[in-house]
Amino acid sequence: MSYAIFKTGGKQYRAEPGATLRIPSIEGEPGATVVFDTVLMGVKGDAVKTGTPTLSGAKVTGEIVKHGLGDKIIVFKFKRRKNYARKQGHRQKFTEVRIKSISLG
Image (tube, rainbow, N blue to C red; front, side, top):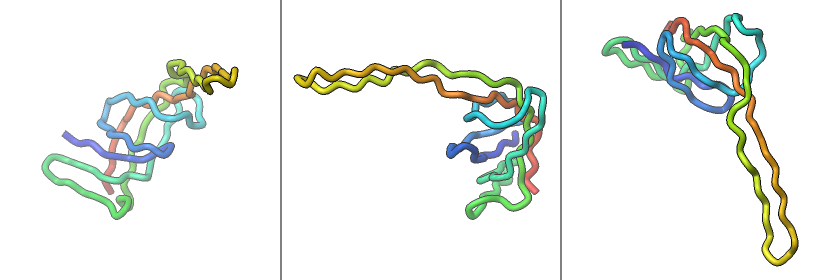
């Protein structure tokens, strides 16, 4: 079993071939290929490679499946006894990516 830990959008994700991940929104049309080259760690069988801070030459290749909006969250601000209450909703944009391959360099 091989997998890799890569970083995109300020967060870290575990990628396995064939897995589908929801990452923060990136540019590209559905069906386009994306390459993540900020790989922090990779595992292939029993061999574990870690980067300092990243693995040179390693990359994770994926295909954009779709773009969308996440679940709505409610932002509610309130100050007691001041007649102040504000309610606002937010839906974060995401991109769904299917991992094709992992290359550890």
